[in-house]
Image (cartoon, rainbow, N blue to C red; front, side, top):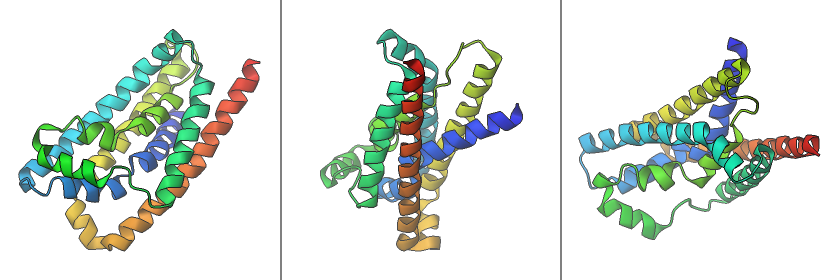
Length: 214
């Protein structure tokens, strides 16, 4: 059972890490918070990591029931989320920015009061990461032992992804000095390729689920 939990946690982490993309977003965070003190920036990094975890955990726990309310099946969400991931990864591979220069300038002037919105949502954890989290919602009876362990495993993966956001945001200056801008770009490209592959895998899982429902 522990093996299954760690498998779920690992898959959730590697699904969310490329879309959250802390190595690429950390320089943007550093740029947007250049007008505040180091202490405030470090506190913001902790808050963003915390809010990212709470936001995605809420989506994981509530998303399944919300989908049932609107009559949307998990396989459909997997196909839609996979397509969104594929599109996001393709844009990342082609160096298209996640937020515009005007949005960065606007955020820079009011960063101290915007830890959750917009620094967490949508800059850090946007529609892409929410869609990915919805695709990770376990199927089956909620109170079933296997389903509960699956929820726990995915929650661990979300926690690890949120922790990576905090680490990269908190230590961005040291990180950039260590690996340089070229190294950060390399990590970003590798993450984008992994995200592309995960998007294809999620689409395939969704298609198989739809076929089994027919």
